[in-house]
Image (spheres, rainbow, N blue to C red):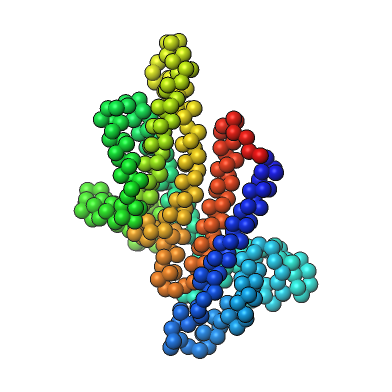
Length: 349
């Protein structure tokens, strides 16, 4: 297990190194970011400050190495750089220090705030949305899959399969627009759901911040449609395979009830491929929530990233890609470990 984790961590390091290189050359390797943001008529002093922060007065290869140093959790910095960039971590040494730090993702062009701070404020919203969407998809998907398998070749089975095909085919951003229009505008007076809103709201009189999970319903439903369709089909296929096994016939022969056989014996053994899909899709939901958050005005990493792209706020976009990629890699490693725990027959080496 330890060797497996170390090997996967090394692979993750190579993946993230590739992401860092792509992000840098995509947003900073071509053109002049300072000019792209401020235009040709931008204030010269402001342009010079941006160029200095991004090391644009240095050769491209040196710009890249300095960017890698900034985002790396282990690096070397001078005392002046630590103070100027307000780096957070453990620093060892004299004027030149070995730093074990939080990645420095630089500052937003628009708000001048630290990018990591901006993303950490938005990350709980994305995690909450992804977890809610995955719970909805898992519970409903397994239920529909079991029903379709038990009622094979009936209208229930046909409806579940047809619905899952539609769910897989429909893009999330398209479904988001339709769902927002019908449930928040056309049926808004009956559903009481808002077109946009985050997981918190402010009291009009006291100004206090309070939790508002009502705003979570539509974006979570939209984001959960595609994994719901996949989980339904996987559960149906796995259940049909398990229900024809010899031990299921033996269980019926012993006089066990149909409900007990299905849920205590068949479903338990059919959940392995479903578990793999759930963990894999959760990682994808974190990355795929961008446009759903934007459509519903949900304050998360996705909405902040789209807004930053619109304003050419490149440090926020670059930081968002790196944070999302890191979460994706970590969740996939945890998913492999969890899979081996749930199914002892699977050995990770």
